[in-house]
Amino acid sequence: MAAILACGCGKAARLAQGRLPNLLTGLETVMSATVRDPAPVWPEDRTEDKPKPELRKETRRRVLKGAQIAFKGRGAVIDCIVRDLSDGGACLKVESPIGIPDTFELVLGLATVRHCRVVWRKATQIGVEFA
Image (cartoon, rainbow, N blue to C red; front, side):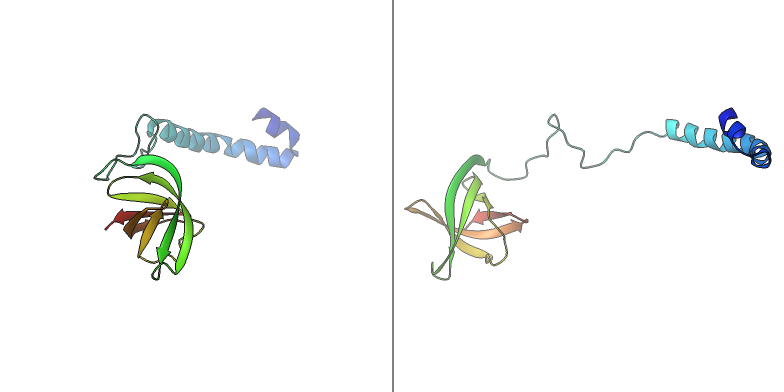
């Protein structure tokens, strides 16, 4: 604080010197409140030790398989990647969920076709349950 007083002009230094005790008292109040208050705990605080709880009925297996979303009697087809898969549903990676209907057929390979209903949509993923 002495450096601040020494570098200013005389009048400003005298004004600052008169206000300095009040400023320090206010600063001490702020600092003590900050030290006493614990850090907030966020409900979504997750780490590797505490992952998000699994809400699905079946466990999904991680896969990276090419597939196709087919609708309009298989006249319209959109390529996708199956990210994870279970007996009850899947997570599909898509370029965009726009234009994908709420129900469609998922074509996995040459023989497997599953009827799907969209459960959730994100920017490049959709979650489906098998009908």
